[in-house]
Image 1 (cartoon, protein in one colour):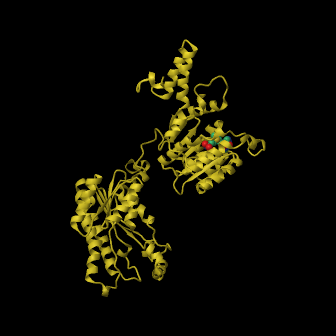
Image 2 (tube, helix red, strand yellow; image 1 turned 135 degrees about the vertical axis):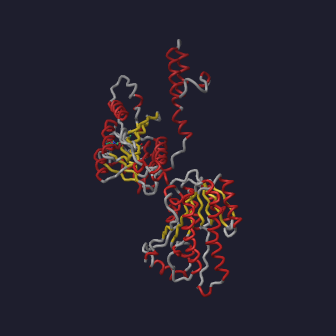
Image 3 (spheres, protein in one colour; image 1 turned 120 degrees about the vertical axis):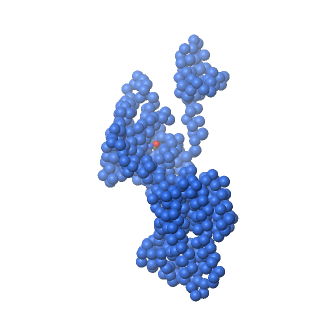
Length: 548
Ligand SMILES: C[S@@+](CC[C@H](N)C(=O)[O-])C[C@H]1O[C@@H](n2cnc3c(N)ncnc32)[C@H](O)[C@@H]1O
């Protein structure tokens, strides 16, 4: 008989534990032993299948973690202890395993944590799972009593290439927490998984020393302690008793919001409140402008953006940046193949994106790119008018055609784009327009001669200021970003450009050319609500070049 024979898809019993309880009730009430045994077999299947099933439907750990778990399982801990290599007799079960590692990884990613403190590292499998979800400059401080374990874990940290994101502090956790507090370390997540009688002390240290940031999480393993917290059984269990008291303490602590999930041995997720209960009403500085935390304001979720000249260079980088911040992106370029290739890159990252071929010197094309974006992506909130050309020539030699072509793309193209975009944005009472200028708008790059380009970009800046003031009250921000010299393959690979490059470098206080990622976040800021009071601004990002 299948387990589900006597259970409906809905109603009671409703969860695996309720099913189990129901089956055990029935087994207890069964008149004969063989009837009870048949019911117990079903109960056994419900229990024994749970963790393997969870593993089978969760993403597997990476190879390094898998190998580390295997090394932990196969290690002769008895021998290591007999040879006095470890301080205590370790048990392989101390390793929380891949599923819990995945859970911590998900929490780290969800919360956008940058710093995590792990109290109780053991062989470092959860440490690695957390570290793998941190940003490049993130850090896990892993607290571990036994130096043997630091050395056991080290090769895996190196193999994963995450050794720089992990700092192991060897010694009693209470001491290490004091050291971290003295260093001013603040963490977004603290994971408690060391000696159970120590939990309450670690929790109080972390809360009282402000090690955990407001809004940060203390994640507590073994919150159920094999069920002995609520079903103590006959044997006195010090650890279960300590956890029971700990759970009660946390539940009463008004500084936190806590919930325990019956996952593995029970995991509590305890969030430090951003504001103490009963505290006087917070103003918007305390709460975050518009009740949004500052990083939240930069998010572009459910926005639609259009970027011209996005088949390469700055436009491509901006399309990636806006997409990473949550926007759907229409990639516009005069060369459709290049637009398609950028759009494909974005889609491969899970960003909704389409490619549009448009020539920004044509009013009709500008209108078409706006209409296509709205029709296919469902709106238009952000427009980056970035398409541009540069034909260097001495002023006395510049042909009328070069002058006209340059102005047609760099200046008229920006104007026609702004006009088409604003038609829609004025109606919706919201919009973010960002024009790409150049530092050439405010100084004369040299020794190369490029008067036409400089003039065309200076016009973009003045156009931005003018439209910015015209549309400010209509909910549209028009701003401009002016990059300095950009590092491109052409500059690096062409030996003829070396002397020119050296002249430029000598004039840049930062001592280097701009890389595309130097610009991306500035575009995201200008595209977000965080810049809603910026009007007609020209943000120069040039490593200080125009200051000398
Ligand atoms: C359950 S294990 C940690 C498991 C680890 N988080 C994982 O999932 O692989 C507990 C660890 O805490 C360490 N520990 C116990 N008491 C400690 C203390 N007072 N200070 C620091 N570490 C301690 C133990 O040596 C052990 O390695």
